[in-house]
Length: 188
Figure (cartoon, rainbow, N blue to C red):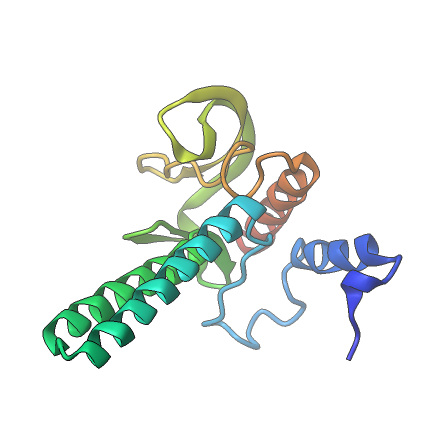
């Protein structure tokens, strides 16, 4: 069992999957229903998810204590709350941009929008005011924007100050290149 976090060449192994995701797979028809995230979830997103899962474990432990004490309705409510927190944590990890043979999918916490490649005219990186970690505070940064044929532009996909790329400018550049590469290949 290889343990890459213990080796000196950790950075090379970490960058290999990201650069491999930059180019679409050779055989586009192999798995047409499979979606790929062209980047890894960032440390902010993973950290918040870990905290949510920790909270869910505390709530489940409280449910066990309440059930042993004899109040089954209270334990049921605690289990339901824990299940909701776990579902929110899993959904939070899935938030982002996904690409595949069928199009580009922008997944948000409560919704997802898929745009077929035929409707995408351009995918580019622009300098603009972006939200810091999704909060109301705006800072100057970069964003990946999708222009659609004959339609309203798609919401900003990813930003340099989002939960996946805050403090990781090289990862943001690689993700932009990957999304633009997928778009260029599948729009042909």
